[in-house]
Image 1: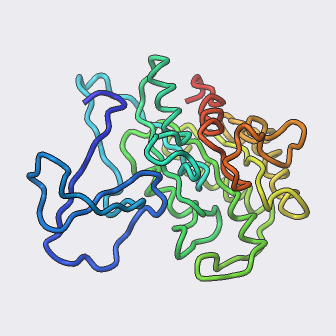
Image 2: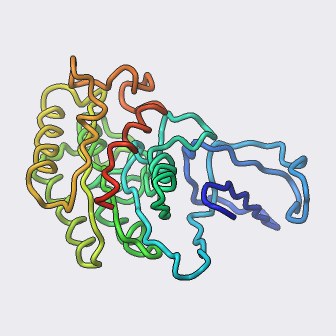
Image 3: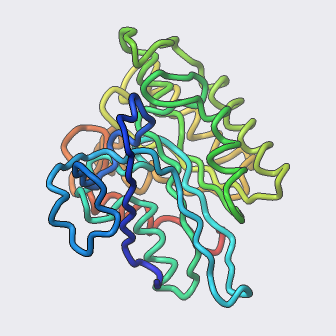
Amino acid sequence: MKAGDRLSITLYFNGPSGPTTFHNVAMETAYRADGDHRADVSADAFTQESSSWYFLESIDVAVKPAGAQQDAVVTFGDSLTDGAASTPGADNRYPDQLSRRLSADGRQRPVLNAGIGGNRVLSDSACFGEKATTRFRRDVLDQTRVGTVIVLEGTNDILIGETAANACTTTNRRVTAAELIEGHRALIRAAHARSITVIGATLPPGQGLESGTPSESRAALNYWIRTSGAYDAVVDFDRVLADPLNPHQLLPAYASGDGLHPNDAGYRAMADAVNLDTL
């Protein structure tokens, strides 16, 4: 295989699996079929479709010659990293586009997408996974040959703190910018303890973040990310994606239409904003 090739993996279960872990909004189609089709040379039997991925968490790829191994870049975050609202099946999430950009520049490196839609820095969720400060070990530190992590987290802590509680949002307590900053500091300390370069990403604007306490919290967190020097480097997604005429919303050319997530062009702008020399 070569960089950028697509890989298909077939799993077979000889009985009902019962409830299982899955990647809910994968922005990619998975195909299912009844029976054992591991030896099939065509995909004709796989007529059932799902937009979620099941069971498989990650794949380690060995590079030959061995001396060509490169440290991985982990993109760590929520739905903005996961690629929500990008074109399904097109691999236009910002981590995908960052990977292509690295390859085009002759700096080919593995880029891991550790985005979970709805994920938060400070609170667990039955729907959106363990909080970032807990899952950072599994999703970043325990991955193979990690050299750099880009952290884009905090949007959902702010948004969910303003919404009514339900099974997915419990707890929905309002968090302060100071608490979010301390959560980010914990991620930085964990990365530095493993000699991993850690890059902080500012939070873009979005629906629900534009006024009152949410606006103040986002502005305070972004100011700290930009100016504190706590991160080894900063990528300013806020300034890249915001409309200069109305900084509290996404630039229309980059907006998917849901008020929060970029479209493919917006995700490309995010990838282009990363200074490759900082990775």
